[in-house]
Image (cartoon, rainbow, N blue to C red; front, side):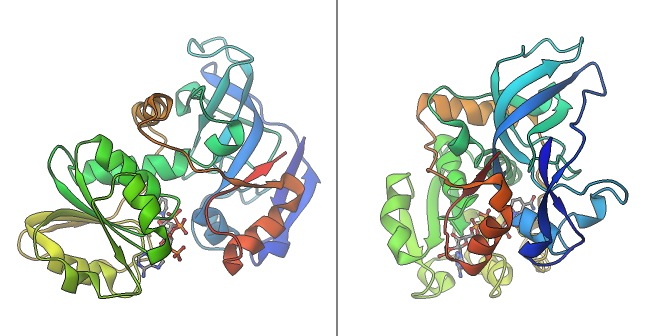
Length: 311
Ligand SMILES: NC(=O)c1ccc[n+]([C@@H]2O[C@H](COP(=O)([O-])OP(=O)(O)OC[C@H]3O[C@@H](n4cnc5c(N)ncnc54)[C@H](OP(=O)(O)O)[C@@H]3O)[C@@H](O)[C@H]2O)c1
């Protein structure tokens, strides 16, 4: 099959097209999925450069990036009861182990996929799983629920715009930080208040009243500064894994999160998309063979929002 493999670690130029053996269902509970679209996430760029989860890529054999997939079930193991060949699915299989989504096929346990919601295209759906699972798992750590007040930093990004909607769906009240141009979008998604991160520092604009902060920025002292807006006993979830975490104080819980392919979370996200409670933003597409250009466009900031690769 066609795939984009890594020639070592480095800049976007290390991504090159290659013919590699197609993955097979190893366990009877595995499915093989024909990839229609593979989403790109920040972790792909970090891993390509030698950081992220680079250490988990195979030492021998082709190193293939990518976790977010939307596609069609090609074949199923004899123990698979949830899907049949031809079913449209999406998911974030294997993370943080390699899934090899920058390719024509992936193989993974069936429970790492969910049925594709009927109201979203494969190209747009491929931008969702890793971001939505991260958002949901962070909100769960933060115990976001009816009436709780949650601040989402980086709310207009790939994880953030889903975190805002998932928090609202849980009944939480959301404050967001984003660039001013994105305020109307975020209010339209249910944020009650949007603070321009280039304006007054958020800790000056907010009192120490929030139940939880989901920090998707992690830089510029955000984790430390976020303690100032949390109530005693609140929760700070710092999502970028490289961000330094402050020492907890005032009984505040400080935690990171590492996203996992959880079936219940993925099916909950799929149901919210299907019902219209969570809206999916359109993704920019690049042909799979232009994965290096896609990485370059994301790294340079030329493209904002989600990017997916089409084999
Ligand atoms: N631990 C995990 O398992 C896990 C999972 C998923 C993601 N992550 C990490 O979480 C981070 C966010 O991921 P993502 O996919 O949402 O990235 P993204 O799409 O690049 O979004 C980042 C957002 O942060 C915004 N931002 C930049 N500076 C800011 C500031 N000073 N204040 C508030 N917001 C600011 C950006 O806005 P502009 O567009 O205006 O610059 C952008 O909207 C990344 O570091 C990613 O690697 C970790």
